Structures are given as C-alpha cells and as structure tokens.
Length: 506
Figure 1 (cartoon, rainbow, N blue to C red):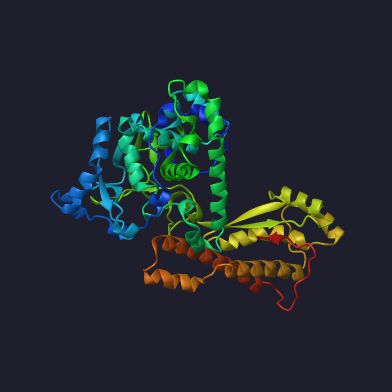
Figure 2: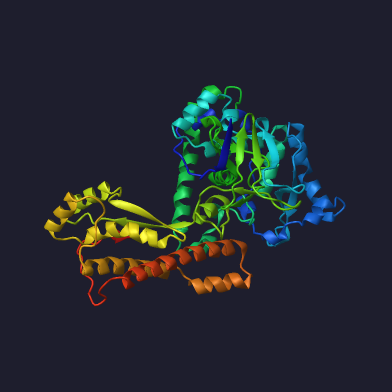
C-alpha cells in the first residue's frame, strides 16, 4: 500500500520514556566542535548549476559536484539504492563565513523528466525511523502513542552514531547532513540557531516569540534525556556509553534537533514507528514549494518520489512542504515561500472575564464553535472571510443589556448586529488593533520593499525581511477589508458605542 509524506511540523513533545529507546552504540564520537559552525549565509536560487553542466561530464562544475557527492552516492548504491533519474549537484554559498563554506548539495533531474516519472526510490534499509532505531516496532509505537518526541529520539540517535565515526553504517549520510547543517534552498538555517542580534531582524513579528517557545521545548526535551536513558536501561545493555547530557551539551543537542527537524519527512498511512523518517535524497537536498503536489511516498518497503511536472536535466527537484504558513517554514526549514497559498497570520480575541455577563457570552461563543479565548486565522487572500467570522464573536463584547443577552441566548446562530453604533465600535476596534500591530514593526512595508529591491541584505536579514513583508501585506489587506466594511455601514454619522467590556485583541 502506498502512503504519502509531507514535511512534519517539528513540534516538541514531552518525552518521558525516550531514553529507553535509543541504542547505546550511539555514544562514542568525539564531541562536535563549537556551535560557531552554525553561522552560515544564504545563496540564491539563481546560483544553481545549469542543465548544460549536468549534460557535460567534462565541465568543472560537474566534476566538482561528482567528486564532493561521490562518497554519499556510492554509499547509497552500495546499500541497495536502485538506479534513478536524479543527480546530486552543487549550489555555492557565496556569502558564508568569508567564502570558506563548502557549496551545498541539492537533488536535480539527471535527465529530462515528465510528470508522473519516478525520480528515485530509496529502500527502507537506507531510511532512518524509530522502528530502525529501536529495533522493536511495538516499543516504538508505544512511545509515540505516549506523545514522546520522535525528533529528539532521532537526533540523539544520530549524535551517538556520529560518535562511531567511520565505523557507523550511517557515516556518509551523517557527513552529508553535517555539510548541509539544516540549511534548505536559501542556505539559511532555522532562527532557532540565530544570534540575539540576528533575531532582531524579526522584531514586531510573532515569530520572535515562537522561537523562544520552541527553544524552551527543545530544552525540556534535553533535560529529560538522562531520565529516559536510565528508564530504558534494558535496551542498552550492549551499549555501555555515557549518558546523553554528559556526552553532549545542550547547544550540540539543539543543533542536532534542528538539523533533524529540517530534514524529517512525515510519512502517511504507515505504522507509528515509521511515520517520522530521515530519507537520503530527501530534504534538505530536495527543494520545497507550497504549491507543488509531489510528495515522498511509502510504497511497500521503500520511499518513492513521483514528480508532478516536467524537468530539464539539471533543474532542482521540487516537493510539497505541506500546508504550512511561512512562519512555520522559516522556523522549521529556514526559508519563506512568496507564493505560499497556505500563508496566514493569527489574531487572538478573548472575552472579558470581568464582564458580569461573561458566562452567558461564553455559552453563546461555545454554541457557535468558539472559545472564551479564540484564535482566528487570517489567511492570505481571505481577509473579508475572516472579518465575517470574527464579527459575531466581537459583537458579544458590546452587549450590555441583559434582555438583549437573553434574546441572543434563546436564538440560534451567530450574533447579528445589535445596533449601528455597536457595529461601528466593533469595526473601529479592529482597525485600531491592526494599525497598532503594523506600528509594532520597526520598518514600514515600503521600507521592506526598498531593502529587498536593493539586493544587498545579509542572508538571514533578507529571509527575515521577506517574512515580515508578507505579514505586513496580510495585515494591510485585513485593514483594507475592515475599512470596506465600515464604508458599507448604512449610516456613517453614527458615533461608536462605548463598551466597558470589549473583547481583547492580541
């Protein structure tokens, strides 16, 4: 049976038994060197090798690419990778660490391809899953059922495998992952690995807080590793190595976690022990797009990629990254997609708990599928639909007459406009909120456009500027829609009503 895969959101799970699961043979490699290795720069898509370089085996680019990827490719073929229709090529990283960083690899069409062609098929013997790590599918399923962190488990496995050096089966794959260091098509790593000054590029964006929350989750995972290790002692009798927190400082674990997060594939319609997979030839060697239909698919005992479009030899192979907003794409994979149809921003609205009619209003909200603290998703291109969804909820805060509240309680459906003045007040509150949110960014939308047009931004600042520009575009679109609702009111002379218990927006 075939199953599809999209990239899994890299959420941190509470890991209370993980440690049992990880083989001790993982624990032997010299500690990775300092985290300064993580300060990388980005390259642009136009630095990809041309198709002529792929066709011409005598070209310098082709020789460099074949040489640098040769060990990795030879290892895959030696362990069962069948012939495919792709090639591993290079893209330079022109702005990185004074030009000392090695070019990044990417998977490209090795020949002209048509939609529906199988680009490659990786046997499960070359795929890292919890089933393989733990050697026991029932144990892996038990752990994942208990919401243990597959990502932390896979990260710790690879860290200990790396200790084995060339004795590890996975040495060529780990070496390739080290080369990529969690960087995707823009050669920028997740903001989880940015410095504080680099995170300032995200000021005004909710992403700044999301980075802090995710970092705290990874630290919780790290703090539980030793407990899990001892709880799972029966699984590690043959691997007498050091406990995780003695073998690896937190920063090293975080680097490994982020690297796994950037390349893990979420396979569909497979056992829980196989749902999170590290696939050679998969990400980050593949190029992600939000409007692509091609997905890595589990078929029998292999993972297959069927392309969804034509390719000329040398063009990067594109796969779907799942229905994720740009904030998630940047946090997980270090890039944003300008054409992302799933992009969105969030607005949180909450009923005032000091309102004497709070309980009644909460009941009305729940009856209509909303919570006392409700998060609304403003999806790109659907600003008016979101306002129409929010208005009934916000109107509740402007109801003060107990008789009106009882009438609403006894009726069905959403809260309709109560009065012209309250409707104007609701929309005015929304407009003020949107303007204040836009004012929270240190730059305007026009300034962002000018900086990006200039083309001289440092890579991390460029990708951060692209994110905040897209956020501001959505906020401006939402603000325009709110003003259009105001323009559509029957009487513009009505002053907004005052509300003692208006909902809070943030």
